[in-house]
Image (tube, rainbow, N blue to C red; front, side, top):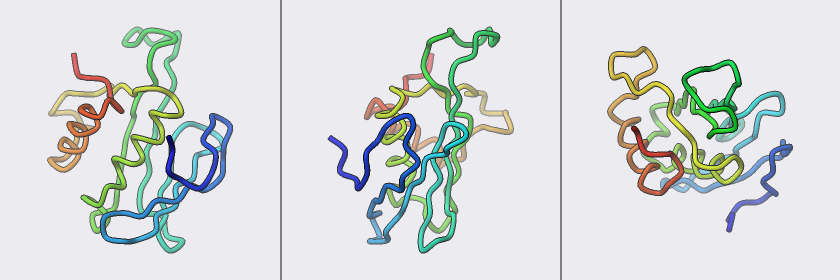
Length: 132
């Protein structure tokens, strides 16, 4: 069950709303040109989640496998308010459980401490597939 205003589907470009832990109204908008979500508060972009579909020419993933998280960013003042987790929930309902591609802690895309905590919670809720 999706407790949001709007209808989730792969071709959806409508706004979805969510009230974060601090009582702020957050609007999510799915990218119409590629996969992912943008988050807005009071008309200002405060975050985004980029995912990609599996590619036949990428030997690191199985074709027809899970969609991959490329990056997630939430502005610092909006972190720890449930926004990132809600973004993972929405996208996992749209595309299935997601896979985090780059798990190397020395990578430029490695999660921050807050990002790692978010990933762990998303794994427990089965929005993200467990690491190998």
